[in-house]
Amino acid sequence: MSPFTAIVWRELRRAWSSGGLLMPIAFFLLVAILFPFAIGPDGKLLARVGGGVIWAAALLAALLPVERLVTPDVESGVLDQFAARGLSDAGVAAAKMVGHWLGFAPALLAATMIAAALLHLPAPALLPLLAGLAIGTPGLAALGIATAALVAGLRGAGALAGLVMLPFAVPLLIFGAGTGSDQPGAFKLLAAVSLLLVAGCPFVAGAAIRMGRS
Image (cartoon, rainbow, N blue to C red; front, side, top):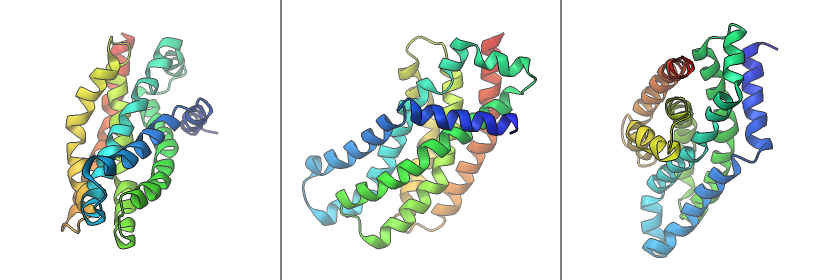
């Protein structure tokens, strides 16, 4: 097994063995449950805003595990061991991103089907919504790893993570919500933003890890 695959498997195993990903999924479903209480039981209104609500809930749920993505490895010296073995910081960040996405995205997509029923989304709108989340969640995972590396070891890291991550996630939210309302080009723009984040965030996270070590 290559070091990259070993780190991916480690992240995936650690995410579910510690139950760290159960809280974001529970939070995501809780938003879908509470939202109808806030705006009323009008099924047509819920169906019209449901796609945007699900994307906003997904974005906020993606924030919850940020503190445990990098900080525990910094404190335990795991990242130093990776560096001592000759692994690049950007490569380690990329592997952590893949592992985080594999643990987070499938559960989120499964929970989306439940949330869509709670928000009275029609069946024809579900497939574009799931496709949009499948395209956008790699960008969210990449942004989560970069944010986690930037705030690792800082006081109030949870609050800082929100301030750092949310502005950069706005394009994902806009184009992701657009995929459910048949906006032209929304899928292409969402894919472009997600690809940009996936390509660039490992280098940002790697630089942050390297600076934190020095």
